[in-house]
Image (tube, rainbow, N blue to C red; front, side, top):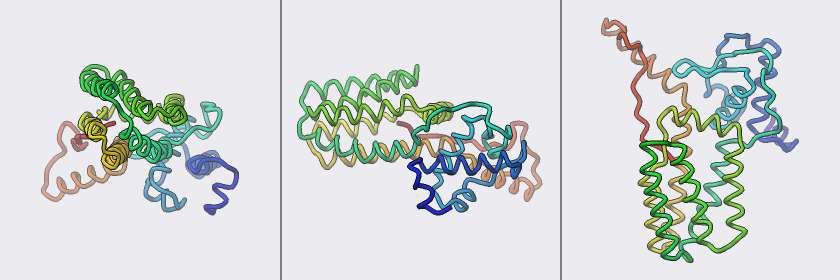
Length: 268
């Protein structure tokens, strides 16, 4: 399948990958209970990025075809879709790429127009995120959305406000992104307070270059955190390494199993 043919019908790239894998499962190439090839191998086979494969796997999860077992891999659950997902959905990582491009420029523009009242509002929203991170991550993420939309409002440009709102609306109604968010929350991903303060400080300095960079860096780290939160192979390789070290040194497996501890110091 060429890159041109993947895009010729207007569908998103991850949809083509999900369809191809679905057809292989339905045809019996991958039997129920079988493990799919690794994410790295699939990315090489289809000549796409690993985030695109990640989006395709989430789509297959939503269809009920596969299940992801952390530390093990992706396994075929059914040989035909069990859920009707409806119209095409936005890819979580492609949406984040769009946010990074658009919101970074919006933030730079906001730095030239923002007033003291808006800065006080943004600071209050960061404080709200920090409090809710310890209580209710859903409320923290709602404050996160208000923070980014408030930056757009600081531009005093209704078209830019509408564009940023549309990106967040797409995020809110996307089944793929909601599934990804649940995985991220389970992995401990929360809005990152210091990154939001960096954005706020750049806006307070009325520095468009710093504001653009702070927003771009923040959204890049969001992408990284979501990739880490949904990683399967890295855990699997770590487990294999631990098992090999135990074998090498004649150690028995612990009662807790071989899963390595992992700390996520990343969030939105």
